[in-house]
Image 1: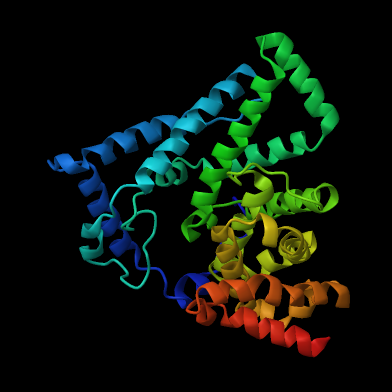
Image 2: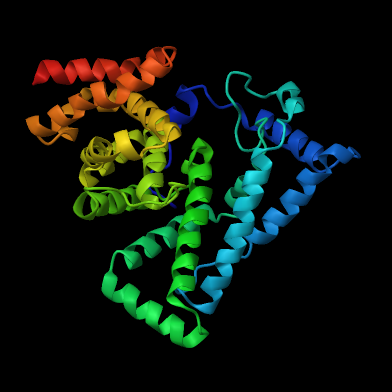
Amino acid sequence: GLSGLAPPRRAQCGRSRRRGACGLRMAAAAKYAQEGGGGDEAERPLKVCAEAGRKCVRQIHQHPILSDEWLQLVDSLKQLTRLVQLEGRMPANAKVAEVHGRNQETPGTLWDQEAHENAIRILVEEAKVNLCLRMMNDFKVWQYNPTDMKQSVENCMKTYDLSQVNIEQKCRQFEEYLGQLLWRAFAHVETLQLMDIPLLIDHCGLVLQHVDATRAAGLECSSSKLEQEVLVMYYVSSLFKHAEALNNGELLAKAREVRLLPLVISHMSRHAAAEYPERISVEVAAGLAALADNEDFQTDWRSFFEGPEQMAAFLALQESFVAPIISADPDKRRALRPLLDLFNKVQRAM
């Protein structure tokens, strides 16, 4: 299988957040029909976006880093990311909510939601998301090896007559564009169900370990905050949110093996107050609340902490991280209740 973490049958049936296959196909078909134009000139831009998106997605292939093909790939990723941003500014498709068979209690899937995410949907349909993850992981492994990176940059400068500044810009663009596409894709459980989850957890662990070892004083990310050293916190949050719709036990075991929770706590303790954009703070808090509410986690939560010092670091986040979120928006207290309960549970165990 792609991941070894496909959802067990009971998870598919027991947590009724998904609708039957027939209803999903009908909703998807209706959305395709509406976005295909159907004679409505107002929806023609969606068809253009979808066609351009599919063309870009089909140009995504793995190439040696800084090769000519890799440099050209950056341009395709740039165009695809711009399409994602363009779709994000389009008004929601209210007609989708009226489709028979659609689950009205959820925002919908990539195929039947009101929001327009054609580019991300096509990325999933063309089976490119795992490839994108492997490409990003290979890039960060390469970037974290100064010797390999220096040699590759020097070769690229000689071969293609590019300056070091040009090459560094291409590398930054590759990471930011691909990172955004992965972030948008991982927000959907149906994407994660097709993912190599162990690789995703390993990738998050790799980046967070690097931050822990070399960037304790500061993330040193750009003002856009789109480098992996920030974005992996979104990826982790999505994993925690959707764990129970995946193979929960194996996902949590892998997360424990990689020390994912300790690394997340360290990242938050050192960087959240000064370097997290507001949106990521809210997302990370929601992810931790989902983990705290996870039944398998609840039965063995102590095994995810590595001793009293780490538990104390986690408890400190209640005042420094969670309290300001609730203070800014008291309505979030209810959604974060499982996390607040976990703080109390850890406090009692100290």
